[in-house]
Length: 282
Image 1 (cartoon, helix red, strand yellow):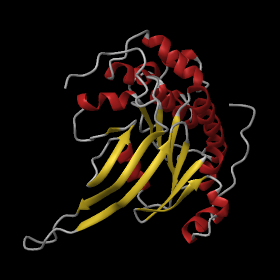
Image 2 (cartoon, one colour):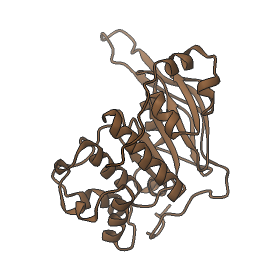
Image 3 (cartoon, one colour):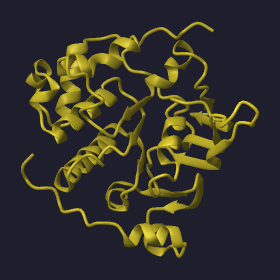
C-alpha cells in the first residue's frame, strides 16, 4: 500500500467514533537469556490481558507503582513495541508496530509522544526550531514549517525567538515545554505521555499540568498519560486505570480514586503528595 499524500494537518482518523483508542487482550512477554546451553529460556510477562477503551477527548491516566508495567503499556499504545498478544486500534484502525515506518505514518500523524526526561529527549546539538520541526519533516507535513513551529512554541508559553537557541539555555520545565511543542506541532489528535513530569520539581509540575490542560481544551486532544504520581493524575485527568503486576485492577472516572476500596488503589492514593497551585510567574 502506498503512503498517503502529504497534508498540512493530518486527518482525524475515525472522527465519528466515540472511542479514540481501544485495547483488547494486550500482553507482552519478554524472553530472558538462557542460564546454560541445555536449559530452556525463561520468560517474564510484563503485561497480561489488558483491556482499555479511551473515549475521544478524554484525559486518561494510567497509574501504578514502579514495575507495574506502565511504561511498557505506553510503548505499546504509542506503537513503539509490538505486543505478544492482543491488539491496539486507533479510530477503529489496527496499529501494527512491526509494519515499518512508512506503513505507520498515518498513526504518527495523529499521535504525539512526550517522554520522561526533557533533556535526554532533545538533541543538544540542534537548535530548538529544528527540534520542534522534526515531526513536520519526517511526516512530510506541507505548509510553512517556521510558522507552525512558532505557533507550537506560543501554545506552550515560549517566545518565538526560542527557536534560535539550544536546549541547554532553558530550565528543566522549559525543556519539557519544548518537548511538548514538538509533540503537538503536526496537529495530532492523541497525545501520549510517559511520566512527563517525574523529572521536574513539584512547582514546575503544576505549571506543566496547566499547559497540558490548556492544550487539551484548545486543541481537543485526547490525553493518555502514565504516571506513578496520583496527585498529577487527579489534577489533570478525568478517567483513570490502575495497573499492578501487568494487569488493570481498577478503572473508571477519576472519582474512582476517592471511592475505590481496592487495596492497590487505596495505597497509591494514601501515598500521593499534594501539588501546590501554579505561581503567577513562569
